[in-house]
Amino acid sequence: MRQGASEGPFHDSLGYLPWKPIREIGKGRVIYSPENPTDRVYLIVGGRVKVTTTAAEGYETVARILCNEELFGATVLVGGHSSEAAVVLDAAMLMSWTRDEIEAQIEREPRLGLALAQYFVRQCIALQERIEAVALHNTPERILLAFAQLADLLGTPQPDGAMRIASLTHQTIADYVGTSREIVTFQMNRIRELGLIQYSRRYIDVYSRAVAEALRHHGIDLPERPPAEPTDPG
Image 1 (cartoon, rainbow, N blue to C red):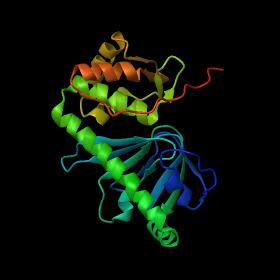
Image 2: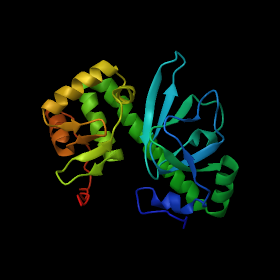
Image 3: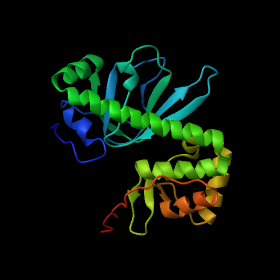
């Protein structure tokens, strides 16, 4: 098993990856971009990374916001030019592997190939759900859905039942939803007045059960999640 691997949703795939030196990258740094493409697949050991894609017209969209034990940079495995970029949201600690290293490890441990395929299929399904949300729902519902998704992906459970997300800018949330910063600010104030979220400069607390109930009133059902254990306030 890889050193430092912990139990988590992608524990199996992480366990098959060989240990590599950890590289720390500062907040706001660009890891790769279409102009400076990567030749590596990355694993987040600590911190958060924003992955974006840029359309031919120049419009940028946040594809994923990732935290510990998440992989990104998979386009290197399929080759060709990528419109993807990765930017550090918080100071991040990363491991990385070249395509040749991944392929060699899969030859030694074929289960790695299956685990990686399952992981990236799940990511594609999550992205498909977001695309469907953009097509089917109005902006207020899409913003609520975004908070439900981000709380599930990035949140830490709190004693009062909230899921705490380290602060994200309104522009980042707007890019994730596919709307403007001004609309996100307006909707966040409205959602806060309804008691569905609370936020400061340091964090956003999402009351996931209340958000799920509000979405049900709009005919939107979220998938069932196992209950999370609250963190120790002490």
